[in-house]
Length: 267
Length: 141
Image (cartoon, chains in turn blue, purple):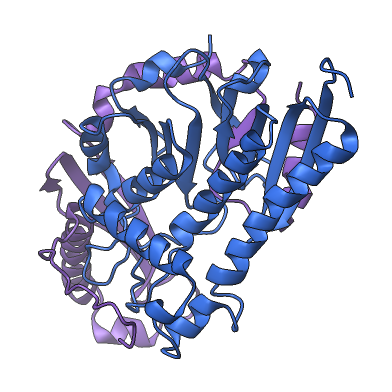
């Protein structure tokens, strides 16, 4: 291998009921690049094995059934618990890992939390020029060389499987402080976000989609989820939060945004 | 809860979204109006003779209800007492948040045609990906 090696790669991994796509350019040969990506994907699967509530024998399923406690489980469960707790406080209670049935369901952060760790692994292994798409949430490495990859399309608030699927708009994160965008909405999985504050935890139907940019993927993801639960008042709320910008689509199809979002539209 | 960490008691005050309460008010108003009109206009003898599907169809308009950002008024069509259609006669948001962002639609539309290398959307399932995203992303760059 010479120092000039550039191997273009694209890998799609199915995990957590969705897909993770890693694509970019590696300074290693084909085999070593694939090996690094495979190791990163193992981080995703390990998180899935630990936190999936769809797998009856996962530590989290056992926790939900009351068969074990956080103290007896791998330290990573405690880590996620604390992270969810911190996010609940940071979002003024609009993000919560407690289900309407009052069980602990951190799926809201596990996907992007694991994806972030997978991306970090790849960077540390020496591949620094790539993007990751974690089931619709996008992360960009800060050494991304391709201009087109700095531009992220936001899906219309309808399922990508629908014939009417398409692009709502495109933003350009090059030369900004942002490396991540997450979108929450009801287009793909129905109204699956609960409102931690309403008596029956049903989220209001004022918004159909919220997209948030942040420097960090988990931050973008959590705020998108929290804003969706909060409804239209989140426009005002998120405007006061440092380090994020957001675009909202209301049920009637109108757009709203935080003050700095307009500067991000692709030219 | 058997988890070793104590779950916090819900520290939040009960908040009822204004939209929900507005809709309940409007529906109550319409239902009231409909009920009165229905009884008033349909003596029992008329009902017993109803044969065709449209014979008992009535349309009533509810009161215009003012809410935080505007006015909502609904029209309800019912046949033999069964609601078939609810339509908005007027629904305004006179000072709603959305009114403050008319320029956004234009800017978003203008940016829509830019090339892009990634797609953000609500978490899609691997099935939906198989159907749609793979081909879409493979066309990129």
